[in-house]
Image (cartoon, rainbow over all chains, first blue to last red; front, side):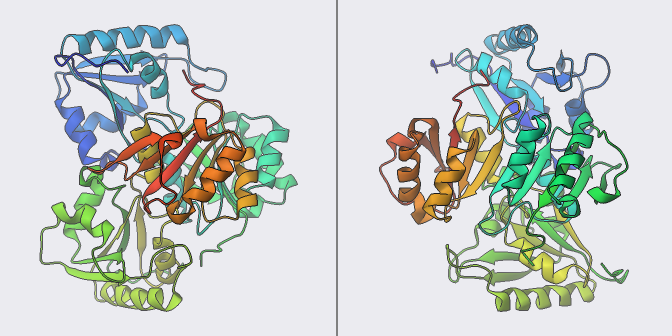
Length: 240
Length: 240
């Protein structure tokens, strides 16, 4: 990384946590309030979830950059959108202004901030503030440890092909299946085939007012919102 | 879970984050300051790391319960120590006092809180507040995403036997090896055998003043402190 200009602003990739605005860290709060410029991912139309988490804490009067992006499975990074956003952000930094990039959960856990990071590191100072991840928030909401003792924990994206999902879940001790969306029906099928349905909990919108936690066996739907997860514990409650 | 007495205090399992006291959440801060009783894990002699993280925020005058425990590999839960601690904590709750149990990182990510949880749930109201996990803090410190796109992320405890470590690391896309300690030399051997040393970063004491981040190839030691981690990315920086 080249040495940044000392007059440059800093780009902060800031984890704002899983949803509850009270799960911001003190550091995130301080930096978000102080930054003259905010940037955040947003859907093509409508509100940004990341901005919504920070909203109760914003002082007003900040310049805002909504990075609007199609969301969903197939929507892997649209390079031109990130290129353009990185240019705007780098321009603010070059002018000496700090930019707080709001990231759902933690910036580097399957987060889109990595695409900005790849474009900005070396052009201006970029620093990361870790946040509470949905991975931990879902386990805490379910009242069940993610992993105990020397268990291997496997985090599995639901869009993977069914044979790979089956292989990974067959070989895990504890697993979290992320990015459920329209893949929930496929996961139900795979888990039933492995006789793991009774070992699986479903968690939706952890830490939000409309949080839902239930055994997978009691879940009628075959599709889930983006902010949902399956937690599988093959050994049951071995930690008791 | 039986319905708790409405006059009972609540036991809060509170993640205090990876080390930087500024990485406490607003919710953790509020609950820790308000609780008349604090409990926390501590070594047999000396200071509690979890209490140290919260220390700058404590108002003073709280009752404190240090749960003193031998630490290290072989030291899986000493049932009698947890039984006794749970009895003391349940006693405070029964008397109507809230108890804040301070947990390093997140309470349910390989955390010892699960052993208290197993003993307290059903006896009194127990609630969890997720915290910033070392898993995310280490990736953020290393400036490298934990997992991208549809990569499977495997979290592997270093005390596992060498053949199992080899098998798991051979089959991973991205991995975090936790609980390094005296197992670092073993991990170096396994990763060298898989030609993955150049794909591995070492992170020690993430977010603390004496944080260290370096390529595994540049690390002379064969033992590591408890608060350290290896991050392996087999595909390199596929997210760029």
